Image (cartoon, rainbow, N blue to C red):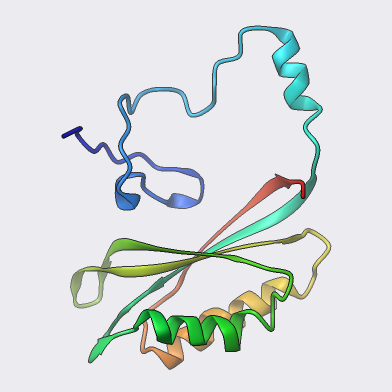
Amino acid sequence: MPKILPRLLAGGALIATLGLTTANASAPASPQLTSGNETAALDRSPGTTFLRTELYFGSQKPKGQVTPAQFDWFVDRVVTPRFPDGLTQLTGKGQFLGTTGPIEEKSFVLILLYPVSDSAANLEIEEIRKSYRHLFQQESVLRADSRDLVSF
């Protein structure tokens, strides 16, 4: 069995958290290019700059767990109306140090991509986080933001 070496990715996710492995944790994060032609090809990549927000939702509650069905309900009623153009939903296994000690739990991850010009998105995302914390008695919802080059 290969050794799992945790390595931070953009947005703070850990490869080990997702159950992936890496052979060489000291390898460069970006591919090595061998010629100027390959660099020029990357510079001509199609796409538009979008903002990307990843939201990490825990499932452990003081009494019980948030079920996949409950999370789907939350996405349908709270998230989708705010981001009707689409989103990506993933599940994983997360861990963090809560106020009561270390917590390992099933987690839900949403990836939202939206135009830089969407001035309402930040408020909508904060409403999503606030709603989840309130509805499911959570200490927090992790948010990671970045800019991505996107083409459809």
